[in-house]
Image (cartoon, rainbow, N blue to C red; front, side):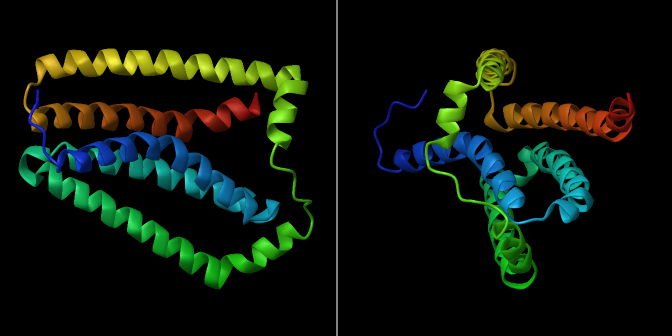
Length: 192
């Protein structure tokens, strides 16, 4: 445990909070952006490709991290930062060359809702409150189980690199299974 007070530890805390919030916030922001910038016709064509790309990325990313003992944690961090910058550049390119027509097409049909319309719907619609409750319970239970797994893994893999490699292997396994289910099982379930 690090008990030395050092100004550089602030970078560690910023990085921790950035990484922890990135997964929750960026996924919601991404799908909000995609939904608001595409028409329903292009969404039907493009969403499966986006989901496939995301699943493949969720396998490749942890695969790189399994080599943390060779690549080093700072190198992996820089690879992730570079990829995030590439996504920002691609989004800028999309909006400047391709997406503006889509945004104009979809925004002309929609009224802009008020800032509290989501909260109002949540409190007035029992169905939405039920979905909110179920998803909140799922997140709480998932967070507790994730924490327990990480504490057990930390005991088993004391070095940072070995611990990272374990979590990466776990990520590859889970995301590969998820990809296979999405690829093989989704169309079957949709036909039922």
